[in-house]
Image (cartoon, rainbow, N blue to C red):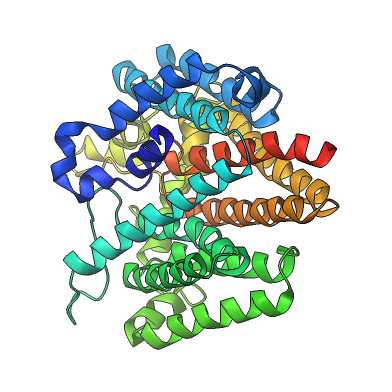
Length: 404
């Protein structure tokens, strides 16, 4: 229950949606209690030593250590230390989430919480943010902006599809299907091109790589979702999406504050400071002090201290080449771990086959994050580390299940 509250707070931002919960400090309280309970129950499947065998944990520990080593070399040490502490908290909770799981039912419950709180966030957005003809897309929300939330939706969609297609209880399947439709509607209202590309990547993965669900069921589910997409998307939405293939005068390609030039400058920061980068959370500082725009600012031109708008550029610029390699190895190892669960469980009994379906759902979620975060600064966001924790937890309980 404490882990569920943490996911609802860290990923679903439930306390931002309902301010009445703020005095209770659900994120802090659930973190402290969950850590304490896990330390008191170090037996069998909850032994933390089991997590050390997982390659993602090793790469993540390396990334955490490298982040600590980079603090003295950061452009602004205090900011880097603040970001490192928050990152350390995310990694501690990664261990708590993965360590708390005892069986397959625990994993499914936590995956359902991840999906459900995303749907709750989407429902709140639909009820509180009304669009008008002049403002056809969502902007800044409570914690996420529209682009960030579109990526969160992309990671939740395959998890909801797992419950809609594979769960035994009809009520839960219908509720999951309704939740999927809500997420698609909000994805459209976000107007996010990165979210749309993440959605297409997930669709492609489900059609080609989601082998544990019959093709007919996969296609039926996707047809329903695509029908809702086509029926609710406005002409302005499709005009916005067409700029992906026909950018023309897109500011992201031409403007100094556009994504392409920001990425180029970010790669430049990484090459200027290849070992430790500019420091965690210091990309905006680098924009304001190291960039060519900053030198122009010294001559009276204003400079925007902006974000990297690319998780991988952000990681490379802020933690150098070693930090980027740790990060890539971490994501790759999570994906490889899920592939191994899929292969092992597919040869087992029906219960093991269900774990395989869940593993492929988490793989699709990781794909959605990787594509969506290519256009956003989400290097230290709870989204990735929560998905990784659920993946490691699944692998932990799948190993004995396939050996029986």
